[in-house]
Amino acid sequence: MIGGSQPASNAVVAGLAGLALVALVTTSILSISDEPRLLTRSTVHVALLGYAAALCLFMRAAPPDWEVRTVLGSSMRWLWTWACVAFLLHVACAFHFVHGWSHDHAFEQTRRESGVGEGLWVNYLFMLAWAGDVAWWWISSMSYARRPRGIDRALHGFLLFIAFNATVVFEAGAVRWAGLIGFVALAVMFCRRRMASMTRQ
Image (cartoon, rainbow, N blue to C red; front, top):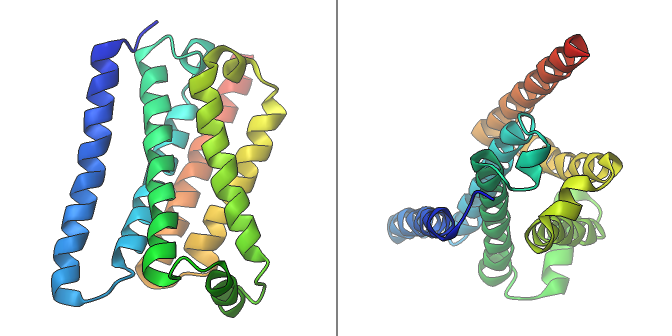
C-alpha cells in the first residue's frame, strides 16, 4: 500500500501548513479591517476549494485508488480530509466569532438569511455527513472502496446541493461568480468523463 509514514507525514505537514497560512493571512488582514467574520469566510472558502479539487481527483480514480493503494488514492484521501478539517474550522469560527456559541443565535440568523431557521439542521447534517465519510475512509478503506455507488451519489448530491446554495444562491459578487464557474467546470469534467467511459465500453 502506498502512503507509508513518510508520505503520510508529508501530507500532515502540508495540510497543517496550509491551514496555518490561511489563519496567518486572515489574522493579518483582521488587524487592519476589524472584520471578525473574515476567518469564518476564509476557512469555508478553503474547504470548498478543497472539495472541488478532491472531486476532480475522484473523477480520475480507479478501484485501487479508493483502496488507497496508490499515490493518487493517498492524495485523494488526504485532500478530502483536509477540506473537511477546514470546514470544521469554519463551523467553529462561525460559532465563536458570529454566534457566541449560541445555537439559538445561529438558528435566528439562518432564519433571517434563508427564511427557514430549520435550515441550520441541514448545515449540521452536512458537517456530520462529510466528517462521517472521511472517518469511514480512514477506518476501513476496503469497505469504503466497495460500498454501493448509490451511497456516493446520495452523499455528493447532498453536499453539492448545499455547496451550490452556499456559494451561488445565498452569495453575491465574486463568490457567486466563482461558484458558478466552479460548478460549470465540474459539470463539464463529469460529462467528459462519462462520455469517455461510455465510449470505452
